Length: 211
Ligand code: TYD
Image (cartoon, rainbow, N blue to C red):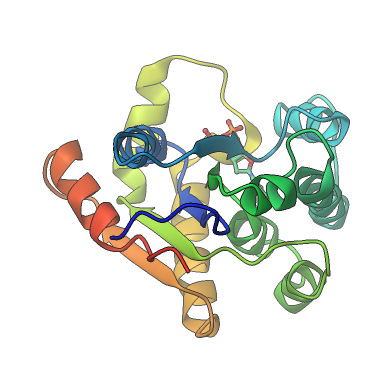
């Protein structure tokens, strides 16, 4: 991978089930890119913006939302995430940052697409002019029973999608179904076997070159 300056940064998305080890892989990739002299900005959805707060209330089960309401809230949050003038994705990419994002529209396709009209959820995200298409999406693939075990072991409050192993298993199937349909997206399925460092090597080998 060559290191260039003055070019647009890369938009790198991580996806996976709750408990899949995305955060560990994101840490390892961010550290490695920084060691190579890249400017790196790590971010996540739902965001810390106002829209993200509305979403977190729903995920905690404090405020019931239909799958369509959730889809629209996630899209609003994603647009704000892209365009906000302080640290929006579009601005950072133009400044040459590699933006590494924990979840993006593939989560909407898998999680909301499971309970709503998948075509509608996909179309409104993909056709939105201010929703940037990722340069690569890494799906950290871990069996749903392993993820459920890790989520339970954390002992933290369980969000609505983390409560049943059956839900996680359905979400994993939906992700794989969605990836089959997205042949124009650069999706890399990383089977999470071996040590975190071994998995990180597979991730790093698939980071696209700077254009
Ligand atoms: P959070 O605890 O913030 O992150 P994580 O579990 O990845 O560490 O939870 C985010 C939850 O929101 C997670 O269960 C997936 C869900 N989600 C959607 O349902 N749709 C979306 O578009 C996004 C971005 C997330």
